[in-house]
Length: 173
Image 1: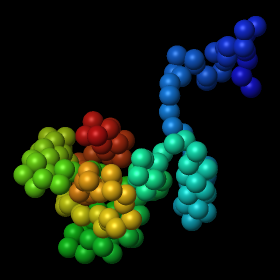
Image 2 (image 1 turned 90 degrees about the vertical axis):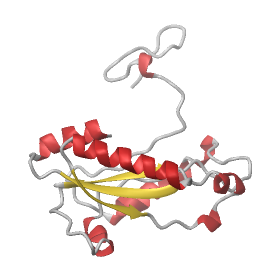
Image 3 (image 1 turned 60 degrees about the vertical axis):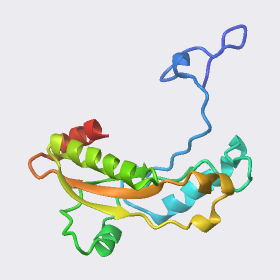
């Protein structure tokens, strides 16, 4: 429960710190403490997105959104079935990065080179790139005019335990 002073200003209590206040468009979280994946979490996450529509996340053409979405655990089975040319390591020993690259081929190639070089510099083994299928026909005019190429890249790090792997991924990000 938030405590307020006599003028109605919220006091710092518990984990709340007024210094951390800033504008934001909204956030929702669904989590299960047992860590088991559930389809119900996806449907609840989508419901949160619907409930946050009021935050003004629609552009001037009324068809362009802000790109809000949901984040889920790495879908290992899906990646294994869609990346048949790559033998993915066991779950928990590889990572997936999602990037939005400029549509200009030369600039996109430079971005790819930087990502691959930085991955190697952090001790990762670069596995592959994956083009993410998109359906541009549903985009508004504004979004279509600046639509990036959406790609994912896969990394592994066989010489580190999971804790070191997480630390290296944080640096890589």
